Image 1: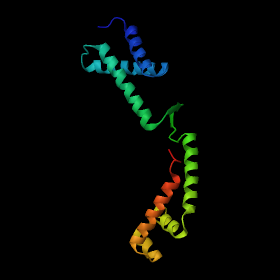
Image 2 (image 1 turned 180 degrees about the vertical axis):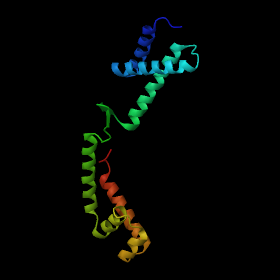
Image 3 (image 1 turned 45 degrees about the vertical axis):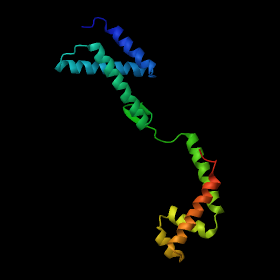
Image 4 (image 1 turned 120 degrees about the horizontal axis):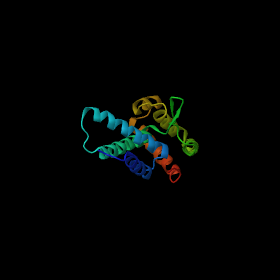
Amino acid sequence: MVKNWQAVFSLIKTVLLRRGHSEQDADDLVQEAWVRLAQYARQQAVLEPEAFLMQTALNLSRDAYRATRNHGEQVQYDETVLVDGAPNVEAVILSRERMTRMQECVVRLNSKTRDIFLSHRIHGMSYQQIARQHRLSVSSVEKHMAKATLLITGWMEGWYP
């Protein structure tokens, strides 16, 4: 049995700190690992409690990382968990600039090609519906869509990341 638990806790905390956890998070992970060891030890004998604690703390660390990566940063305030899933300011500004640039490109299209492009991309109309509306063949609608896509792609080239 382990005689110096403080040394074991300190070692595990050091490993967690090297993995980028804050002091408080490392303490919390060590404590949670200890609780899990105590729960497990009630039902089964633990031959290597130090190894059990280390592995449990590392597993909890991975789980915490995955949760942050998949669900965003969490801020706890009075038993309420707030998750900020909004994009950062830079992403919002770039998106707005990209949208403005895209609008400028669409305006540059001739009116018939622009109308066909917007009918399909914005209003979700099928090529057959657009062809009927404009009294064109489906092949003509396809050509207008290809033309619009090529022109817009060319005008946007080098602008977006």
